[in-house]
Image (tube, rainbow over all chains, first blue to last red; front, side):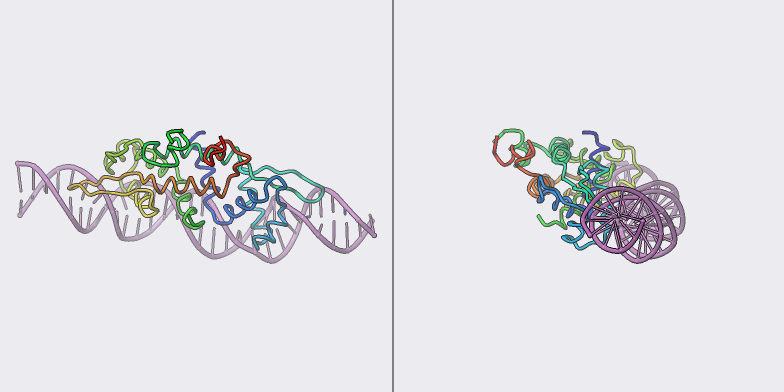
Length: 107
Length: 107
DNA sequence: TCGATAATTCCATAGTTATGGAACTATCGA
DNA sequence: TCGATAGTTCCATAACTATGGAATTATCGA
């Protein structure tokens, strides 16, 4: 992953509402969530939710599927895992950090 | 890690200059880097660097050590690895993502 | 075709964050 | 006690980001 892409993803996640939305989508799993469900769950005005959902979508952190008059949003795990990999590779050090040792197979 | 702490760390890293500074500190390893070295390496005005270093320090992503008239800054691996853990636990899914399977020991 | 529902876009406003030259503080060696 | 060097803080300005009510678009069932 490029540095500029990682900045886009980090900025996108660095907002309470968006991180909560994303966590919600992760919890919803393969059935996804509609904006309406998210509005109810997170108690947020529809326009505000829509703004944040769009940010997440444009960053590539979600994908969506139209189903009649509603839309299902899903967390994009590949995107998130690429970011996690980027941080492990570039911003941590295998010989100084437990989780890096695990991921590099030293444990 | 709390959600609010993860937001602070993500915001802090979600800036090109700060991510570059942090990567530089990771590369510098146990010898660390001074602001002067970073200014030269990253070609950035001293006031701007100082501003970003302070943000990183206040977020807990670095620690520092005064040495005479200069200061050594170091990447804080514990802080970064806590963030990586948080993302793996809360924002990814072990059964949908390779790197999560690794870290959860399913592989 | 209509009214209701789901979702998005518009847009003015408010709030936050970044920039970097200039001034300042601290510590060195001579 | 200087002058030089390292680093930070100050602060005005610029740029960006978020908010949410109102208007708009799309799709449903009757």
